[in-house]
Image 1 (spheres, rainbow, N blue to C red):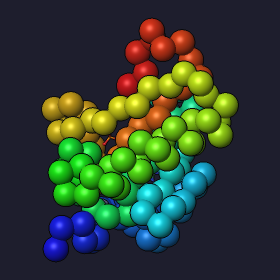
Image 2 (image 1 turned 30 degrees about the vertical axis):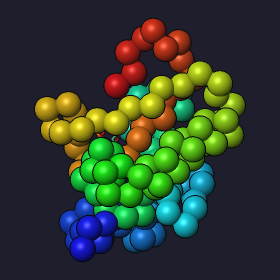
Image 3 (image 1 turned 135 degrees about the horizontal axis):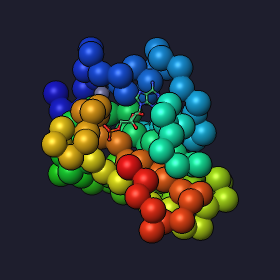
Image 4 (image 1 turned 30 degrees about the horizontal axis):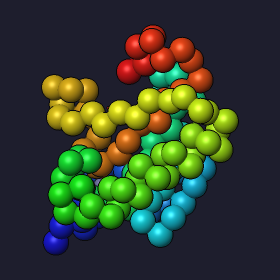
Length: 117
Ligand code: AMP
Ligand code: ZN
């Protein structure tokens, strides 16, 4: 069934609490945690608990959760004291996606004209 946990997916394991992460926010349907290899002073990831291979697939199947991902990204950025930040959805290996569970990067704390990812 769409959205079901995938056995070899790192972010499914983080969502299930099976692999530790520095969690900042948790809702019934999303989790926000620090990226393990930060590319900016603040680098967060927001994921749905449900497994979809990328953000567009999530939005097509569960638009409410996709919207919640953005709301959570904004809330987490505000909690980190960021008024200016960048949201990135890498989609496809050729665009730098390495984990095929939908996620949005929240990057900030540095001048945004610099490349961050
Ligand atoms: P992407 O390249 O868009 O697929 O992003 C995947 C992100 O996940 C990268 O920025 C990684 O640094 C990050 N990442 C990989 N493993 C972990 C982990 N165990 N905890 C937190 N972030 C991770
Ligand atoms: Zn997954």
